[in-house]
Length: 458
Ligand SMILES: [Zn+2]
Image (tube, rainbow, N blue to C red; front, side, top):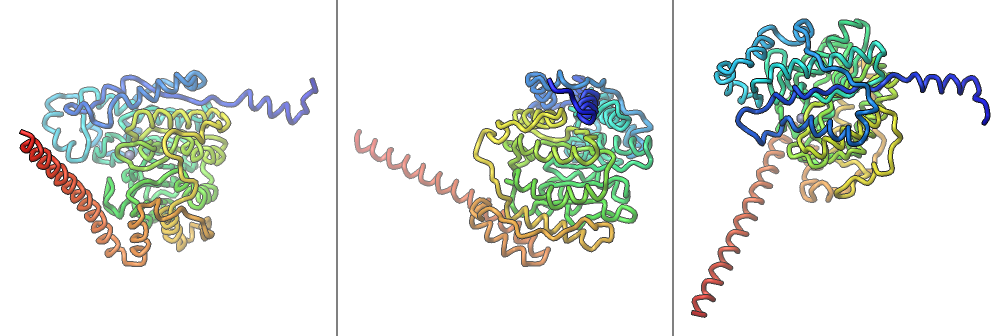
């Protein structure tokens, strides 16, 4: 056997010494559950299924287990108000939960007896793995946590979220390492309104989100997720939204990869982060009941892999949404394999279901161009380059007639675009109603005909 050259020996030694991949999971986070709705999508089984799949695939065993821990008051107060922390803590009390049921429900949030404890663990666990990755005791990490966090505002629980886990962790890292730069990549299908708001004027945290926006009609709604939200004050240029509009979902691997190639990766390389935190909702995954998008497990692996090159692999994946149990388990496994350095497997490209599109859609190209346009005017955005002509998939793939309508819509004013979008939605709904009515009419007609036949027979 040939002796290794000195540089090969160094490489081999470095490989041997490679810091472990952390994994944090704690069953106590299952004690948070909707008190009335057993079929609520944000259910305890979400993290159980992910953890079981990681174990079955042998991935959990290759990670270093990190104990879940509570977030400290100090850590929470860096991004949340005292009043909000007191409120979440008080949810341990059954009377408080009863009195505040509607207050939470109106914000799409809920609480059970174990919610306050689970929320503390969820936030604290993300903080811990981020600090461990920053001090080098972990190379990267996966936090299988709930409740999720990116909708939880400074003073308000919202959208299944109680504390903003990634927000709390980002602030904790910045306190421990004041000069550090953090890139938050939010690939949850919903816009992370609260994370954006917390760091909107902060140049040390680059917030990037791809999400369904549907001209402000998709949750959390309004204009916060629009491409024109580019940051403010010192944070101008450090908030990047790629907002999917008009496609009514269906965005898949090729669409996300387009946003990565032309927006996220150039911006991230220019930013030079010390840590990447992924707000990893898997509700843009194929089969998700809320997202309506089409990312495959292989797609998530492809989105994650280039992030590993940004800062020597210092990436923390923190679970956000994702409601199809099989999809989130497969997606989390694909991501864990990337963190562990596994090469892409040939099986990656053979995800079950319809063949995935290899070309991006016109909607994706348009969204990417809108984001680049919004940033092109800012002095901070030297990374912006014109998107070359990109071949897009056929309009039929985007819903035929609607695909063509959307092309025409693009030439209109924003206000008119929004009005037309809702018109299109109404038309679709009316079409479905009419189809259902005509099906009912023909069923009634054939029932009447068979009754008449039976009458003739008798
Ligand atoms: Zn979500």
